[in-house]
Every structure is written in C-alpha cells, then in structure tokens.
Image: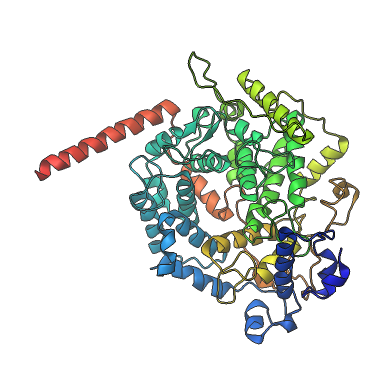
Length: 572
C-alpha cells in the first residue's frame, strides 16, 4: 500500500490505510479508482471542513450526518407533475418513473396521502401503458416489455392503488408472459419478437405473477434451473450462464430463487450456493468508500446500495428457508414464497423440455478456447458437462456432485439465518449514502461529481433502509469464531471505519436519529407494509389454472376484436 502517496491525497487520516493498493502498477482501472477515492475522501472529511451552506443541509446541529428529507422530497415531487424537457428520454420509461418516484417518496414518508396520486398511477398502468397483448409498455403505443411490467406492478404497490391493481387484465397478462418463454433455456425474452433472455426477465415475471396470483407450474417451468445456472465461479450471478457476476443480476437471481424456493435442498447444493454468494457479496463492499461496486474491479456506485445491500438481506430469508426456520414476515412476500404449492416449486427446478424430434434445431457446439489456457479448458469442459446433463434431462449441476457442507458451513448458515452474521457492513454503507450520495439541492446520486437522478434516488434510499434494518450488519464484526470462518478477508474485515458521528441514538441508524426509514420487503423493494397490503388484495382474486387463464385471455381478445368491429360498423 502506498502510504506516502495516500498522505498527499484528500483522504481522512482514519481511512488512509484503506485506499486501494495498485501494487506499484498504474493502469486505467487503478487511476480511476484513485480519482473515485479522492472524490469520496473529500465528502468523508470532518463536518467542519464543509462550506456552511452544505453543512447546514447534510449535518444536524450535533454535526451528525443527516438525510436531507425536505430537499429530496421536493426533488421527487417535481417528477409527479409536468417534467422538464431534460427528462424527454424517460418517455419510454413511464412505469419506472412512477415507481422510482412513488417508492422514494414512500420511504421518505412524504408521499401525498390522497386519492389523486393513487388514481394517476392506476390510470397510467391500466389505461396508458397496458398493451392490448396484456403486458405493460414503457409509454403509450410502445411495445410491451417485461421490465415495464415489473415496474408498473411495483408502482401500483408503492402508490397503494387498489383500484388499479384490481383493474389489471390478469388473463391477458398471463397469456402474454407465457408467450415470452424461451423453451430451450428455461428463461424468457423481455419482449417479442427478439428480446434478450436473462435473469432479470425471470425475476420480473416471478414478481408480477406472485403479485397478481398467476404463478402456475407451466409458467415457471425451468426458472430455478436457469437461475442456478447463472451463478458464477466467484459466487455472484450473471445475466445468463457463463457470464460475469453483476450486482443487479445477482439480486434478481437471489430474490427469484428465494421466491420460488429454488435454491435446492440444504445438502443438495443449496447451502453451498448461498455461502458462495455470501462470500462474493462481502468482497464487493469497498474498503475506503463504504459503498458497493457492481462487479469485480469496478467503481463504487450508489445504486448497488440496494442491489447488493438488498441481496445481503435476501440471503437471510433464503438461509431460513434452507434450514426450515419460520419466515420472519409471514404476511409479506417471504410468507408468499413459503405458501407456494410444491408442484410450482418442483416445476421451476426442472430443466426446460428439449425438442429431440427429427430436424429440430440443436444448440450450436461450444467453441474450444485456446488450449494454452488451463482455466479456459476447464471452463469449456464444465460447459460441455452442463450441456450433456441438459440433453439427458438432468439438472445442469447434476454432472458434478455438490461439495458436502461442513459443521462450520452449517454454523455460518445458522448465524446468517438468525441475523447474527451479515455480508454487509451497514454502518459503512449508511455513511456512504449519507455523505457521498446526497445532492445538496435534492436527489441522490451514483457518487460525488455525478448529478442526482430518479433511479439513484430510489435505490440509494432503498439501500439505506436495508442497511438500517440489517441486524447483524449494524455491528462492526468482531472476528468471532463463526464470522471469521466465512473467509480470510470477507466477513471479518470492516470495509470502512465509521467516522465519529456523535453517538448512535437509534439502533441500526447511523448519524442523526431522524435518518430512520421504514423497512422494505427485501424480495420486491417496496415498503413492507405496502407488500403486505397488496397480498391481502391478491387474496380476493379468483384462482385459476394455466388452461383457464389462457381460455379467458382468448375469449377476452375475441370480445375486444368484436367490439372494435362493431364500433367501426356503427361509425359507417
């Protein structure tokens, strides 16, 4: 570590020993990391180093880091009305704007409690952006897309729009989602006809289907199989098999597997998968900055406060599933996952059906990588074993027996499930969000030097809530026998030493006591009470089978076509 160089940089003395070590080799990556650390170091300086105007917004009277609630609420409320011309690019993201804004205001407890907001969001989802096919679009007249469908569903939840929730055409939505399935992979395409198929598509459908009571064995066939195959050798998850682990895909995969109870049995691979993910996550929290990077050797980014911070919370829910412990929140999505019928769970674990008929298209052969690279040869061999297992109708991981769990592994899983061990240093993460991600004028951002936007405002606030309610992460690890066993540098280290903040008067909350946010449902990222409320609404919906839903959608489409024909005849 370059101690002499770090002394010349704008890094607080308490954090100087945590700057990244380039091992004497300067590269573009190391130089960008140094610039990022410098910009964060300035924001992590003692409060007296701040200009008075900024200090009054970001610190309370006791110089404790403070969430600028009023400024953020004002920034967000502007997005509920007529947006400035600079937001023209959001024309294809209207459900996202509705979700980011209402959820952020809801966390700040600043969402106007009137029927006008609920009515606007309900009309947007059910009238403006629901396509004739049944899915939701990014904007009027656009193509239905799974990401927009996911965002619109969450917007209905966050706004509390019961009328919009009950008005959504469920049979048409189901038929459209089922038509997106990619039968050869177990995934789905995000839109027709040639959308990409990845982990976020699976998660989006699982959320929408869970919320609207549309989870059937036919719809979810192969989902868990596919998500398991997306886990990398590092422990994170990529968008598709054999990719690079990434924060957002990791959250989608982990939450999707947990909602489907698809991790596998404790000793059949589920425990190993979860511990690998735990260790990968613990290495993504940056030592000096305190926030998370999305991938290995990337810069810190405020949005990963949720994508990674939320995943740290998902792991606890998943560990409780594997160990047979009762859910922490039976009325929320965690409880909905426990109540999932076994036939749905088993169907999601099954590989997708393989068409072996004459003339059927077969997967292209896997290209051999240069033999000089031993690691590449092993990867190719692993891919071929996976392809062979799939062709035989086996689970993709069946070709290799999962390693046995040791007593120490079981102790770690139990500590995670009981909230005594976390991959998250919540004090460091809260410090990063409050000190580095807040914009003085309102809104939250990626990192210092970057403008605030609705996306980062939403996920920074969600990550802040997740960190505040992470019981184990609220304590800096003491390197006890259980925590130090996770790995040599994972659960035992402290990613950032918190600066003195004048005392922590509210358990789990860093800085000013007014920073506390309500908890979010870690499996869907809306306020916990909102998800519980929506599942109550779901209980009033009629249950229907796959065939019944498709028949209803077909009949509905015929009725719509007849009405349109009758209207044209009447007009002539």
